[in-house]
Length: 114
Image 1 (tube, rainbow, N blue to C red):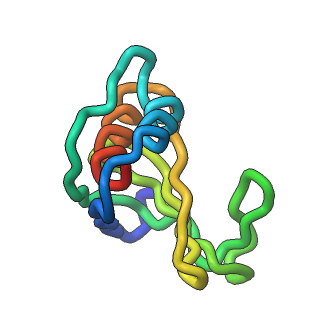
Image 2 (cartoon, one colour):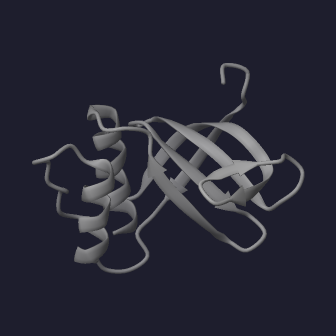
Image 3 (cartoon, rainbow, N blue to C red):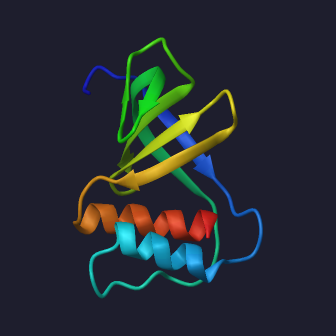
């Protein structure tokens, strides 16, 4: 991962807050008892490109050169994973674990997309 080029991902709110999405982000990314902050604002994540043109197979991304997915490991703010399907224009975010860094990732994510 040290040799991977840096990448920046900017997420901005595109509508009003959604309680159900905030609850799901809290469940997946936040430490128990940690609340999602109110308000919305954009976030700029810094990440490392882990793989490009990957195929998605159940719970993994594999086979470089075979599909539309780019996998990023977010290193700040917080810690998490983002997979982008650049051909179809959508993506997935998922937890890197259950600790304070993942909670920070979740807080920013909730303010940007929920």
